[in-house]
Every structure is written in structure tokens, then in C-alpha cells.
Image 1 (cartoon, one colour):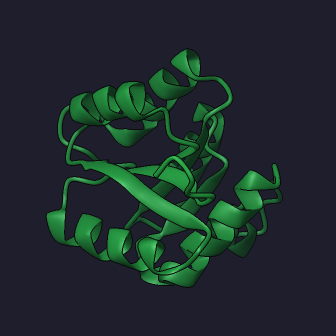
Image 2 (cartoon, one colour):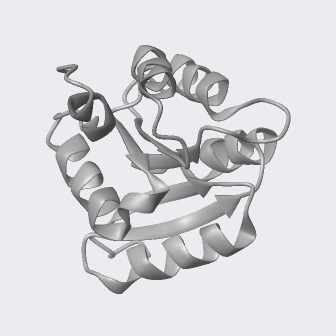
Image 3 (tube, one colour):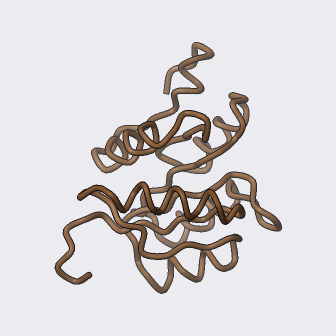
Length: 140
């Protein structure tokens, strides 16, 4: 992996099937590679510390410490880390919480892999992606 030009991602989601699916889809292309995955915040934080990825994709609802609080902790320790919030929830309040925590994007799981890929690309170009907020007329 030392010569791999793809952006390295840690994926944190408590649903194994989601982790497996997202990992496989992200790894198909030549832009991103999931270097590690975790099912909870504690393991996710440990993996970020160990792997030093370029980005983290984190489910906002995790058992124990939720993804919003994890985002805050990650960015407090790694201020230049790119964090993408992933959620099953389309409520703008949840997206606003992710934005306030420092996430670069909020992707609703029902939007599919293209939305996640677009959010990652935008984030690495320092552009925020909060389609759910724009849907409700809120500009980010």
C-alpha cells in the first residue's frame, strides 16, 4: 500500500453488511481504498490513530458514543482529517449536527454509492456536501 496513490479511508459503521458493501464499492475504483473498518466509536478511533487515514466515513448513529461525538473527537485530535457523515436519517437537524461537529459532508445511505463518492471528491477539494440541507432550502 505504500505505492498506492488512492486516498486511504477508515470506515466506521455498526452494520457489518453496510461496512462490507461500502468497502467493496469504494475499493473498486482508483481513487479510494478502505484501509480499515470498525463497528463502534472506540475501535474506530483506535483505527484512525493506527492507520492515519486521509478520511473517515462515519455512521452518525453508533452504539455507545455516536458518530457526531466521534466526529468532534476525531477532529480535535486530527484537525486536518476529512470526515464524512453517513446516515439513514434525512432529517436536516441531524445533518446540521454533523456540520456543526466539523464533517465535510452528510450522505444519506439511501442516496447510494455515487453520492458518497461525490462527497469524498468534494471533501478532498475542500467543498462541503450537504444535499439533505439543500433539499430543505438551507445553504451550506
